[in-house]
Amino acid sequence: MESARDIDKLVRKLQLRASDSLSERVHGDIEKALADERQRTDPKIGRRTMISSVTKLAAAAAVILAVMLGLNVIDFPSSGGVAWARVPDLVSQIDTFKFSLTIRVADDKSATPAEQTAAQWIFYLSEAHGFRMDINADGNIVSWYVGPEGDTLTTVIPGEKTWFESPIPEGERGKMPEEYKDPNDYIRRFVAKPYKELGRSVINDVTVEGIEVQDPPTDGDTLENAVGRLWVDVETELPVRIEIEGTAEGKAVQWQMDFGWSEAVDPAVFEPNIPSDYTAPLQ
Amino acid sequence: MMFEDRLLILRFNRGDRTVLHRLYDKYKDDLVTLAAALLMDVSEAEDVVHDVFISFLGSAGRFRLTGSLKGYLLTCVANRARNHNKAARRRQGPDLEDIPPVPSDGRGPDQAAVLGERLGQLSEALEQLPYEQRETLLLRTHGQMRFAAIAKVQGVSINTVQGRYRYAIKRLQSLLDYEAD
Image 1 (cartoon, chains in turn brown, red):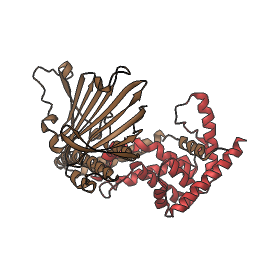
Image 2 (cartoon, rainbow over the protein chains, first blue to last red):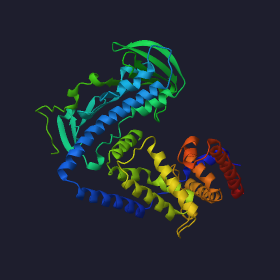
Image 3 (cartoon, rainbow over the protein chains, first blue to last red):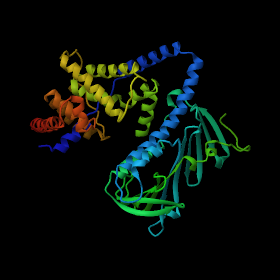
Image 4 (cartoon, chains in turn purple, yellow):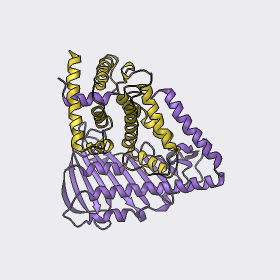
């Protein structure tokens, strides 16, 4: 007889595909309704509304992220000095943040992970200034900029001294790129694990308080003997850093996620500021 | 992607109905699967999914979505499917067991054939479950919903939902074991 788990797995495998005719019906009806709506709307008003909503979207995305971070943090108790109950109120005022993910892999077993940086992603999100993502793979940097209107993507490649702009289709605006790692989701899963308190430490001159978990979430990457640590600023009560260390295929691996909130993010980072000697070959 | 869901919810709550295109593309297969497994009729299932999205068209900006987007859509489909089932008016159309299920784990052709046969047996076994048990099982396993959320959808206690789930599993164990012989 099949076990209950087998039955559960089998039911999960049951998967049908929506027919093309259904997709045509649904998309057609949605498009027809939208077309009717556009006909009834004053274009000038529509444009202003769109800009406003996209601007607020960026802001709300930041606030949602911050609030969720706060709600997750407040879920775990602490004997330390952090007043977790205040976190949601504090983060709800935040309209700008920076989140970076750095993955380091050691060359061999004897080296430390810090000796080689494999890749780094840095994300900035701001109500007033929009979105920016930097990807650094082995020193090759690509930066993406999306202004608060959300209608244009500017790509800058310093190593090639090139840049180009491309319009963002209306249906794509507000979406995060595939490379984006969702920090609020990650932290929620992280703090759901059993943990031990680490007490206080200092990161970049900031006094922090931390917890440590075994086998932290790694989003599909296999890390053996993995240990994760979350550090929270004792003054602002906001996450500062998450560190994960483990081994993969015999090599030491380290993930480091750093957070910056509000005034820690310079508004200038949202401006492409393209040097005059850069070219735009695709335009 | 969870973050994308949150942005879609945000846009929808602000009255942006264009997100429905993306919502549909993202979850159409899951929704059709749930509706078909509940109603045991693919045509009727697709009508249910279509109706869910049409009802959304008129509601953007008028109410607020919270929590899991997928869970919300599955709940909408389950509610509509239940109404269809209560009416007990099945239209003509291919039954679920006439449509080969799509193995979702990327196995090779031989394994897929075996899996397909097993899934066909599952479809037949599911049809023999009382509707409430079938709904509970599917929302729990396919929808990955908590028992408390299912209890809310069905308007019953958590104990009742847990009981329905246990009975469904037990019944399927018996039916699949019998069919395997």
